[in-house]
Every structure is written in C-alpha cells, then in structure tokens.
Length: 427
Image (cartoon, rainbow, N blue to C red; front, side, top):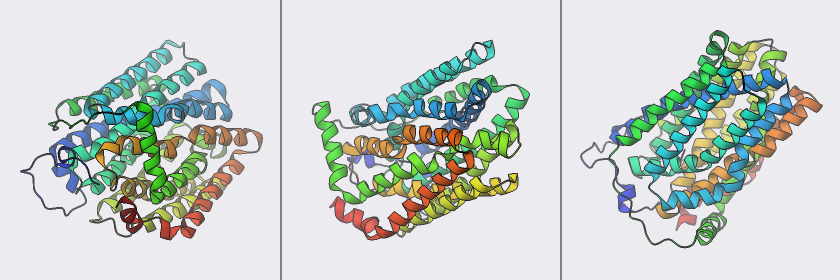
C-alpha cells in the first residue's frame, strides 16, 4: 500500500495524460494503473475467497482454534525469515516481471489446494504446507507490488494510488468472503480455491499489457551490504522507525483476533459459513469507506492524526466484537474495525513511501512488510493458544487492549511522527 526517485521511476504513465490532480480517483487516469487496479481487484477477491474457505476448511478438519493459529503462523513465518532479503531482490530486478512470476506461482498453489480438496485427500498438513509456500512467495510479491506503484503513477499521485490500493484490497475483502460463504454452502470449499486460481489470470494479463519505462539499474553492492543499507536507512529516520514499530505491535498482536472469527461465527454467534463470510465482509465494507475518505484527500497534511484515529476506532471495534452476543452488533463492530485499520495502515504506508528514494524503495518496503506482518506468526499462535486455554472472548479482549495501548503510545509520540518530521528526516 505501498521521494526522490529516478526520472524513469517517477514519471507518470504517459506524458499526454491530464495533469488535473483533483478527484478521489485521479490515479486511475494513468493507463498502467487502471490495468493494474481492475486486474488486482479481481485477483484479490479470489484471494479473500480462498482465505475464508481455508479457515473454514481447517476448522472442519481439526475443530481447533489452535490449528487456525498454526496455519496463520505457517503463512507469515517466511516473511519474518526472508523479508529483508526479499527487499534486495525487489531493488535488483524488473518489478513487473517479478510480480508476474509470483502471481503465477500463487495461482498454481490455489489450483493444488483445489485439487486436493476435490479429491478428498486434503489434510491439515497440506493446508499448512501450502500456506508456508504462499507466505514465501508473498515475501517477494508484497514489497514488489508496493514498490511498483510509483512506476505506474509517479510521485504526484502516489498517495492517491496507495489509498485506492487500500480501497481495492478491502473492496475485495468485502466481496470475496461473502461469495465464499455462499459457495461453501452450495459447492464446498474446493470451488473457492479453484476460482481463486482462475482470478490470478486477470492480474497476470493486466501486467503483460502495461507500458512501463525500463528502470535504470545502478551497479549493485553485495546482498548483505544492501540489506545493511536498508536497515540503516530505517534506523536513521526515526519517524519511519516509530511507525514500523507501531505496525509490528498492532498488526502482530492487536489485529490477530481475526484468527478466531470462524470460531465466533460458528459457536458464539451461532452462524454458519454464510455468517462467517458476512463478518469478514463487514470489515471489508468499513475499510472501503475509510479508504474512500483517504482517497479524497489532495495532500498528506493531517495524516498523522489519521494514525491515532485509526487505532482508536479499531481498538474500540475489536473490544465490541469480543463482547458481542448478537450478529448485528458483531457486523457493526467489524465495520468500525475496518474503517479504523484502513486509516492507520494506508496513512502509515503513504508517510513511509513519500520520502524514500527509488533505489532503496524495495528494501524499505520489505522492512515495512516485516513490521506489518512479521510479528503475525507469533501473534496468531498466541491468540490461538489463548482462545483454546482461556476463552475466545478473553483472547479478543486482549487484542483490543493492545490496539488501544498502541493508540496511547502514538499520542505520546505525536510530535515524532508526522509529515513535518518525515520531511526533516528525509532531508
């Protein structure tokens, strides 16, 4: 989600395109980004379908909240292990070709899980292995896609494109799980996995149709040297470091209540697969509303306040979800969480990306990815364990408390995090 870059990287898609920067959807004026947006929207809807169906499948196979945490642990552990090295690769290669490769591998993984499920041979260790494979590929795919945004829209529309990316991501999260809930009841989980595989064709096709100027690649230092350069950059620029630390704590331990949503839907809210899909979709709807608000901004002024507002909203929403005994209250809580998380994440991503040079972009975004999801393996195991040993409601209450603690920490560091501070750090 996803500065001073090279001229080629910072150039808009076409010099003949309009220069009017008004409007919430101004980044879509770039042909390359239009292709990417609609192709990725289709693919992400399939990805969210698979995510919802995969959790339901694990619950069906094991009836264990701990195993839900184990699958999440397997998916995000590779990011923790190879994330910073992946950023070096992103800075060394043609990003579009790399994304085509990663998307193709993820498509094959989805078809594999569909075949195993349709044949009746699927076991939970298959799901864990494929989740680990997807996490490894995602370690390269995520910073690659985030770093690729500026090549499609240029620096002037970067903030708007990041907000639209968030709207796209969460719009897919709204659509995908809801469809998955219906498909699981009608055709079973295998259909969700198969359709996810098909959906990757849309983004692969869109990437092949783009016209992107070739990146000017400077001579590369050894990999370990480049890793140190990226880490040193983050360490020296304290506003970015503070933002990444907050992301690590909040996403790693606060937002991992999501692991237990299938259990809430089935046992505590007395729903079925369709109810689970709607719970996830409600958060997606809230996120779309939050992203639309961000996309309408014409500047980054005041964005640091969005970080605080986002954490406060999501913390309150998580606590409400954990205590709710009615489906409509849980749906409303999910909506609030979605709006809050989008304000926090998209604002955080924008503030990081605006002030990093293109030659370091892949490495810095891999550090951002590491902060955003690197703690997820530990957090998902912790939440799964607490859900099984104490109760799901207590586990979710702890998650909400962690998020509110992050908001309080951000308030105390308000002067250290913001556009003005980032500008001084970048200079």
